[in-house]
Length: 264
Image 1: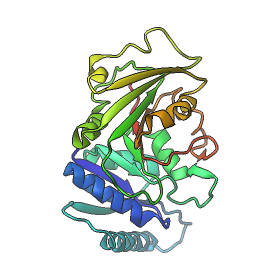
Image 2: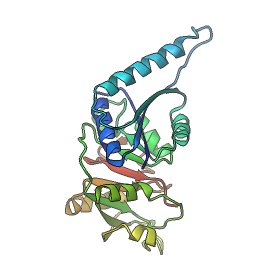
Image 3: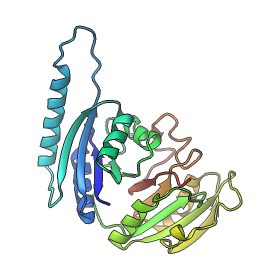
Image 4: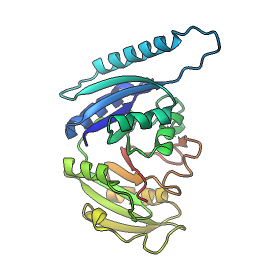
């Protein structure tokens, strides 16, 4: 894992989120790209320098934020970019060869009932970039025990497990697999390919209505310090993030959640 991107919002937890990102990046010897994406909606006749003003203020905010954290030996690059959130992020990730996005659950929302706000929800639901959702105010610590929860172990895409493999090898972490049999289960869904089987220490099979319910049922017995889930068209986040937000009553995690690109 060489390049990590952190979209920055304007919440009170932005500083602690950035500090986690720096600490996480240092563990991998990775570069850190700190970005703020903005859009300008102006009426005809509006001063042309509005965009430049916003860009300048955004860069100043990022510089001040970075100055408040201990960057250690991490190479930190800041960028203020104009554009649509999803499209701009995807372009930025492609240009900088980003391996992982670190996401704060609520970059702008202040509602306590919300786990993922609209901005973070869009990043998770509408992009296919591997992401790590870091709880607000969470302090970095080495990962020792990862619980991967999936309802199908079928892998068709190349390199989709790279982020999980990188975390496992960097921290020498244990990866336990939770196979959740849902009403959508098909024959062969639980057949493990060598690529996945090679990084798994223990496998548990459970039957639940959803993958999330399976996680809830087995969370305490596994006691993980990181969850790993997968994007799917009918997967872990499909229904919960149709509106780009997710409420705490539907899903909440007190530990980081690694979201892989779809396996298929």
